[in-house]
Length: 326
Image (cartoon, rainbow, N blue to C red; front, side, top):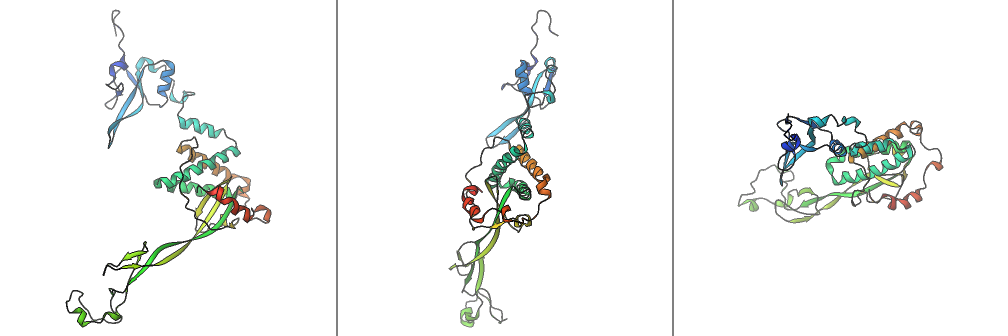
């Protein structure tokens, strides 16, 4: 304890490193307390408590190493003034504030926001393939629920594309028709002893229209090979989402045939929603659950009148403006 003629020791200041932080990798220094809450620094600022960021490790990258922080450290005498993390009202993390915002939304507002979130997530899946499996599974669940609840319109079309090219070469590298006699391609007298006119042409597939034969090196132009693929265009609250086949009975019950178009529109950027990615997921999940539990979803049945279907011409006329980003 300091005597009457000594100034009190500032434990935080004495433990700082050259960058002003406190390294706790080897343990928290004496007379200090570690507060790991992300909101602790803002609480300390509000209460006028001196603190320092707590260094818990280092991350290495091609640019060198950088410290990793977790919360702050404060003097033991000040720690009692900091309220528990769960009671730090008004200073929660961004995710907590956004979750609270979503929980306060009504059903219509939640559905509107969820469509915007799915729009952003769908774009993100195209840019970051490692996220695509999770996002597309959520997308499929939401769109199915929207169709069952009667808040979505569905169009169906098929695309035809070239999947590759079939090539043939007359260099006769494939063998004889019906002749079992063995031969050596390296034999100098081979051309004099055998007639190559009966040899089977060599064939192969390639993604390129022009491809070179590996045997003779000649460039051959292949025959295009085509395949068809089924697509659905699901439109919810003015935004369109392309969903590839196979056939989906839930969509087929209300789907209209529309003009075929290219579903692989260019990615023009990820729209800003004002929510973290985790909260965007949560928003779409809650909206999907709401739709799945709705009365319309539980009593979904094939439409019995044309009033329940959108006009095909109207659907096709709107698809360009409503779908462009997907």
